[in-house]
Every structure is written in structure tokens, then in C-alpha cells.
Length: 493
Image: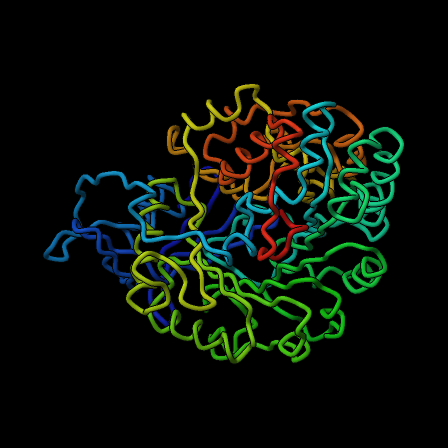
């Protein structure tokens, strides 16, 4: 059975019944789903194994609602498959407080105050300043996560070391010289505040799961470590063929914990039995945290083992959030269930404050009304300070697009019922290609696409709003900003 983009198969093996969903693009990546969510009229949710009886219902649901929401089925009080009406949920109803951990270890907009001179520059000149960048490097990943945001990727789309180095040099060396020459007033302000010229301050190596599988990973990190730049790493695991000492060069490392049947790194399919380099555990200078996406694959045992891993791996934090491929209301319902589970396990208090190093990131899609109010000029604010270079299309074109953020692949538009693309499309959200990244600071801020039309489900409405407010502020007000000294990762706003 197929729809426009995916092959959907109901299968079984010695473990049990499952649904396999395969992308129909060139690489044909796939994921295996053995669990689904049962929702009851009182809002309670139970994650259950897929049975033979439920397979056909799930296939029909997936075709109707997509490969994320299709795995949420409704049941009545007698545990019979049903289809009842539900009320929408308000974010304020969810047990949650945004604390220091969420503000430090995620992008909420709270750290933008620490870079206010670049927004003063934007206000008076119209020119942006790229201080943060994320690179995918390639599209190779050994995991098969059900919530994968780039399942439609092509594993042959990869960049070279030389292309990557040139990209970074333009943002680091060339941008600093450009600002010293043409925007000395704002560059001096920034240098007084931060100690450096206006240039790239934070760089994240991310990707289709595992940037440390890229052939030039160690060479790039060794070169980056010679620069005055904070380096972050987002990965699904730690390959044995990589010298573990390379990880000492990172400001922070975030390990994504996948569904336990999706990763080849997990011994006996237990995330807590995977190999973690000892120097990462022992390194007091590198922040080490986990990211976990809640979904049908989650049970209380996993949540308890996550909590136990804090001391075992000497973690600085565990970020927990829901599947961003869900549309806004479904995402909020999932957040509500997650918050209550964390409260029941005493991992957060009754208000939603984290009691320890586990925190709940309340990240959810925006609305069409918010988009119209926020982007009155139809221009994304993120592109004025942030760039995400994804290598999609690189094999064919020899270059690939940059984007204002990394979350355009999961934009599930509730107002149009558009499913998330689970892949990058430069013709929709692209700004410049990687070989012309300097145009993001050498040309005035302009509209590459209209976010009101293409991003009404934006996950970074708060960040956009902070930039909008900072850009509109007077110099007197900006100089009165008090930088929160307790926030970490200031160079990754």
C-alpha cells in the first residue's frame, strides 16, 4: 500500500506485528513501528503494542492523518476503538515552568539579550549578523527513528572538508573584517559586550543523526579548535572508529536517545547499555546532556532508566520533549501527558519546575494568527543572526541551501492539515546556497520566502518575537539590558 510519499506495510515477525513505513525517495529510508497510542475520552493515554487486530485500523489512520498522528487512535471507556470529539488544549493548562535549564540548553530566545548590539545594527542599517550556525555535513545515520525529521533525505548528499572550511571562514574571518570596516560603531559595541568582533560565535555539528560518521569529522573539529569559537555536537551515538579524545574539544555534546528498537548502538536494545566514551563522562569542561522525544515507544521503565543515567554518565541535563511532527493541538496533548508522567515520577514538581537535571521543553507550533501578527513584513527574524546549512541536493547540484532554522522539516500546518515534509526543500524555505553564505551579512535583510505562508506553524515564534522587540528598541533601552549570568551556552542563542 502506498500514498504519495511513503510505502505503508502491515507485517509481522518473531517479535510480533508491526507497521513499516518507507520513504519513496531515492534513498528509501524506513522506520518500523511496533507501538501506538490509545487515547480515551478523559484525556488519558496508554502506549500499546500493535496487534494483528489493530494493524488495518492503523494503516487507514496513517493514510488519513499521516505517519505521525496516524499512530494515535481513540478508544472509549470500554476499550473499544471509537471516534469521539475532543476539545483543544491551551498551553497554559500544561504543568510547566521554563527554568534555567530550558533557557540554557535549548533555544528559547532568552540568550539573545547577550548579543543586543547586532540588533541595534539591524535596526539602524538593515544588515544582519550571523553569530550562530548549524551544519549537517552529510545525511548518513545508522538509526531508524520513528520520529525522524529527515527520513526523506538522500544519504549521498555530503559536503567536502574544503567546502565546509570555506563556509566557516566566511562567517568567522571575513564577517569580522567586514564589520570592522563597514560597521565599526556596532562592532565596537559588540566587542565591549562580548570581547569579540561581530562574527560566528557558536557552531553546531548536527546532521542526519550522526555528524561523527562524516569522513572528515576529526579533521574539521581539530581545525575548529584552533579558532575562538564554541563548538556543539548533536549525535545519536559514538562510533568506535573515532578517537574519543576529539570530544574534549566541544563546548557541549547532546546525545539523542532514540526509540530503543531503532538504534544499532544499543546492546540488548537498552539505551543505557550503549557505549559512552569515558572522557566525555569525566570531562568537567564539556557539558554533556541527553535529548529524549516522548512518543508511543515510551514507557515508565524508560523514563526511570533515563533518570538513573544522570549519575551513571555524569550528565548535566536531560531534555524531554514531544514529537514535533505532530500538529499543534496533538503536540500540546502529548506535552500534557508527558508533564503528568514526569510529575507522577517526581521528576518535576506540581508547578512544572524540574526537581533535578531532567527538564521538560514545552516546544510547540505557532498559529496562523500569530504568524500574521509577528511577520507583518513577511520576513523571518531568525535569518538575521542564525543559519542552518543542510546538504540536501548537494549530490546533484554541487551546492545546497541554507535555512533560517533546522525545524522547517517538521512544520505540520494545523490550519491546512499539511503534514510535515520530513526533509529540506530549498525552493520553499531556502535562503542562500552554501557558496554564497556571505550574502546573509553583506546584503540587507530581505525576504527569501514569506513565513506567513510557509511557516505559520513555526516552532520558534518566541525567538522571532525577541528579535523583533530588540530590533525595535532604542539604544537607551538596549544599554539597560541586564545579562542573565546564570545562563549557559550564551553563544548558541
